[in-house]
Length: 421
Picture (spheres, rainbow, N blue to C red):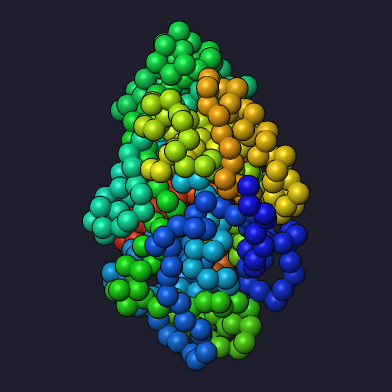
């Protein structure tokens, strides 16, 4: 296992700086994607004033989808305090799912059945949209269609999953309930039940984000890094981002795609930052044949989740803690990796994993597992994307559609589901 990598994305918690967004240590260790071929994105320093239609703060996966969407119709500038694809995107395990951390039935109890149904339908459509974007843009990011296997756990047992399967069937989402005997026969796993679903995928998140940014740049978008936004000034017809060096980026609209480094003063509606850990095995790890076609996760807290890569690695994550800073401690990487390996080995018979990469990251949770997307209250022409929950990349697609429609002056029928209140 490599030693902990340290950079501007890492450190010891939250640092104070004159900035319009909270600066946070987003990850520790060395993610698998740090060695991805095809993650580079040319960026330039911001040394002179620039004026554009839309300024995007953040060059991770959310900013990349946003830049790709808006560069079709507008002049766009993307700024990032580190550099393209150097923040939370690197810590993603890129399990691209339409299922939320909170099941449909549980979400319905919190926001109502009608809205919960809309949320799940929009998520399913977003994964399909993502696949289409990768195809149409000819992005090389290792995208592969997968099924999802959701295992009964300590939060939702077999009876809850059976009800969940029925609720999904009622809204047209194809899912199959597996009892303990069928789960054991088909997958060799010992749990009281599971839900098997189609429509998910996996990818290399760094290459996906980089590819989207390069496509936006080819349409004229400019990418500036490193840039620290020190001040946001509201004008009658524009928003000015002033860097800590005093350079102005002037735009008709600004979109904050800062991941878990929230814009100051923007409501988060009770969301919190927690710590999570992940690892990747050595390539060509021997696995059950079925695992290559599935994303596996469990209805537990904290939950274990895992999948494979094209070169035969197993990516496993879990061991979450309710702390916004514990992920920044490199001393925790080795014991957390051992705990994750122990759990996945106990679940999958015969699976033997040796960690080749290990990393940790900040992760955002909300009470509904839903993101916040839309216009920032009290800030005209300003929007924010806060991708809480385990579907950050899926939510990035939805965010680009909702904010893109708003800036174009068009309605999005689901914008109210994710709006700041």
